[in-house]
Amino acid sequence: MKLFDSAFGSQEQALSLRSQRMEILARNIANSDTPGFKARDLDFKAVLDETQQTHSLRTTQSMHIRSESSMGQGEMVYTIPFNTSADGNTVELSVEQAKYGKAASEYQATLRFLEGSMSGVRKALRGD
Image 1 (cartoon, one colour):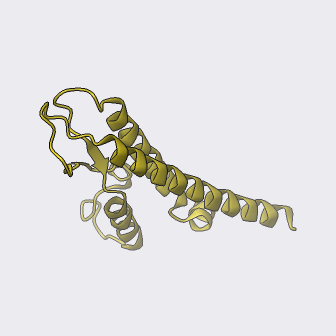
Image 2 (cartoon, rainbow, N blue to C red):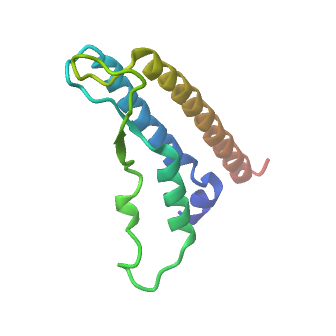
Image 3 (tube, rainbow, N blue to C red):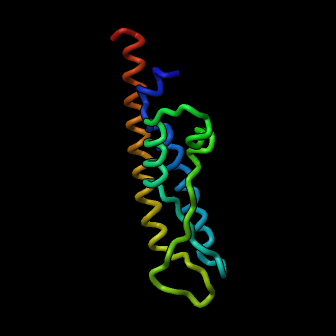
């Protein structure tokens, strides 16, 4: 519904992308001792910026811009380690844990914004 799209903005999609990033970082942490494992991450800002630009454009042909169904799936990139390891693993546990902590706090902040938006819509529907 257009009402909910305008009320929630991009918060719903941001929450989904943040969740996806936390899963990737958790996978990195879980594989910190796996030889040859390559750490990955999600370029959250680039994906969200691309999504917001596409939502603001209007098209005359269906093939001009990617469809919304292909959006929201972040492109994963390999992490470049600060220090190399002998076994080829690029996960640096302390760095990944710090990234996960920051991602978790950003997820909570996005969730609070979304809850605030929902509360506003609820109040408007009740007539408060």
